[in-house]
Image (cartoon, rainbow, N blue to C red; front, side):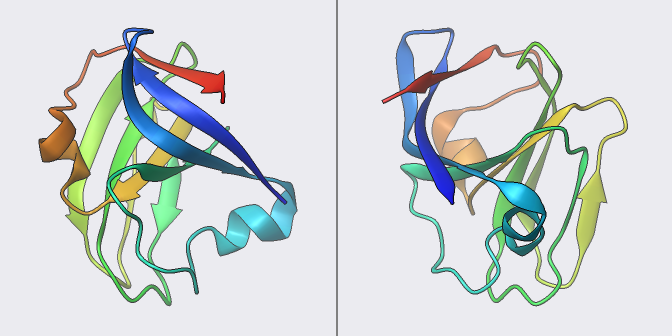
Length: 117
């Protein structure tokens, strides 16, 4: 089951109106595999995760790594299918539509906030 939340920058600027948090081992393992490409208003947050793979994916995504306080530690734009990336200093991983990092002007050091809708 996916929980639907919202993501903000600095607690008041809405970035994503649909932020999904996959539950359970299989939900986290599947992630975006087999799902339609994300829209700019959508994302998936993998809690307690500092690496993602793109095996069996059909499209590129942007990846944002965040620490335990939800501060951005690094970003990866346009991660290609059948590749992977990681950030050992991250606590959580945010998967976004390709191009979302630039569109939202996300940068290292910015504070993000997850809220119920």
